[in-house]
Image (spheres, rainbow, N blue to C red):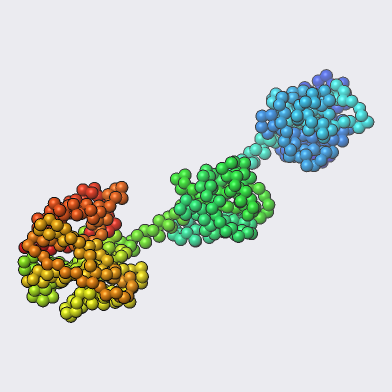
Length: 594
């Protein structure tokens, strides 16, 4: 203070200080106080250091009044005051905030204020006897409080005036210092925001060129370590409505993340201690506290939580500020956009690969199907194959073996895409190899089955129906290997199903010989062969067309030509599905005796 008293006041400060001084000491009994007051005014008004001004005011008043205890409180919010300087009391008092429910506009004695006032207990607890308001332009900006005087002397009216004079002289300086401090805080905040925006801009450029979620998370980790500095962290990504760990550095192993599900309801970044006060987050907050997490930052896209950043304490032990949480929220949302872009890019590549595979499968499948059907004397033949979006393994064929013998075949491979098409290609090759060799249908079927078992796993199998038609005798011998039994529509209106045969091809090696069925086709008789894409065609409510409906349709069109029968069934399917996309191919092969 002595060094400050020697400072030469500025020309602007002195006149105003003198004016306040004359007003302050007007009516004072001790004119010898004028010079010290003038020097005090120069000191406090020539500084903008709030801590220095408050210390000077408090020490000066305490020295003048011979007091060993005193405090200065500044107004923070309406009715809220914070202790910013204290002498002779517990140092932990500094920083405490108290609520004062009425304005104090003149010097008051604590002993004369009702003890029922909650804030008075604070002052009495710290032995503060005198309360002096700090007024700037008639506004209360703070309080100066003093303890008992040494020797137990009472505060006189003249001393009240002197204390008021010192406090009033410092009020303008305190207000000016507060404004400058606020400006500096604003500037620091703006500087920080500027740095954060630059950081976010630089990181956004990095995130935008990365199409790998793991690399995005690694970059996010480095950013958090560099910008915030944390000792524990975990990154969770949404998966089927749940949050699962994508990366973490925790002191304890987390076996289940089911409890994290409630974080999907978060609206913004928050501290775990705040979440613990909310009923919906109480359980997850307790869990996070146990694993050392103190802050949670949701990763959102269009207000939907797609992930979360869980953060432990800062390396230096500092608290997370509101600015920290805002920055982390912006950083996390930048990262999740890149992670989502990486996911969409990966899905686009996989979709393209699937489309390429389906194109290959469709090409293979179409190559297996006959471009034209051979003419069979005494019979009329028609067929159709309607491929779905997911190309299946449907197959049909009509092969002339001898001048009066023909093979008719229809089949359906389990699965979709290229694997199904390739498996059917193998079956076609085996069929065309065995058919001309003169072996019986049951023996040939067993060989095709054993060959399929040797070349495929148990997850691949084929429903298969084939028959040998003699165009002279009109005998139709067949074997059904687990396929939908074809309808035999007799000219007299009766209906039979061709079911004899054995197990599905490729399921297991042949242990029991296949059985052969035989029918003779009379004039007007129709054999309707189909795959399950017909009977299982679904409408928008996922209701199947069913074989029962198919039979009813066939009853009404059995007298028509094979082509007309197929068109009638196709029309019935369209009426049932009403444009609903189908997941399986539709294949039909029809032969009618003339």
